[in-house]
Amino acid sequence: LSNQLLTLRRLEDARIITDNNLKEFPNKDLILVTSGNIYNALGRKEEAKKLYEQALAINPQYEEAKNRLKEMK
Image (cartoon, rainbow, N blue to C red; front, side):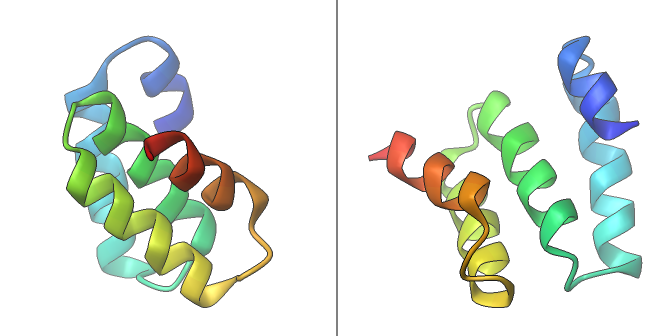
């Protein structure tokens, strides 16, 4: 649902959903990256970067998180 809302540019709705998901599942790399994508789209780059880094700490092979961090440099 969060990715669909992101695609529709309903960013604040997507952020609320992923924030709630992270409260329940704080160590899910997929949710961390999705949340990072949303924060990035909102222009909140530092928060997005931290979320991508958290995802990589859990799963160092997560290609999307690696790619998103590279794009931010």
